[in-house]
Length: 163
Image (tube, rainbow, N blue to C red; front, side, top):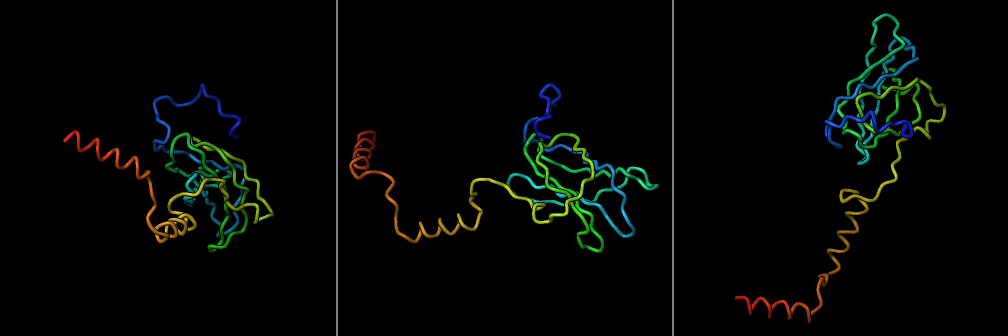
C-alpha cells in the first residue's frame, strides 16, 4: 500500500505530523449477531488505539467506517478485529501505511493470530524500560567526565580574562 502513494495527490496545505481526520473504511465484511468490528491503529511510538466502526448503511451493510485523528503522512500500522463479548473472533494482518484523509481496505481475515501482532522495528526511546535501566546504571556508576582537565582549565582562564 505504501508503494501506491502518489506525491501529486498529497495535501500541500497540511503539514507532516499535523492531526487530520481520517476516514477508515472496510469493505466485504458481514457481521454475525452480537459482533462488532474495530480498527486498531499503532503509531511509530508504539501507541495503540482502538476505534469501533459503524456501518455506512444500516441494512446489512458490507461497508464499515470510523473517523480517526492521525498525524498526517507519518507511518502507522492498522488492523481490523471482530469482537464478540470482548473476545476476538477474527482479525486481519497488520498493514503499514501513511496517515492521510482516507484508509480503505478489504476484509481478509488471518488464521495465524501470532502474525497479527503489531511489531515495530524502532530505536529504543527514553521511556523504554531497558533504556531506563541503562540510564540508572550509568547514574549509579559515579560521575562521568565530559571534558578533559586541561580544556576545563583553559576555559576557566579565558572566562577569568573576560570578567
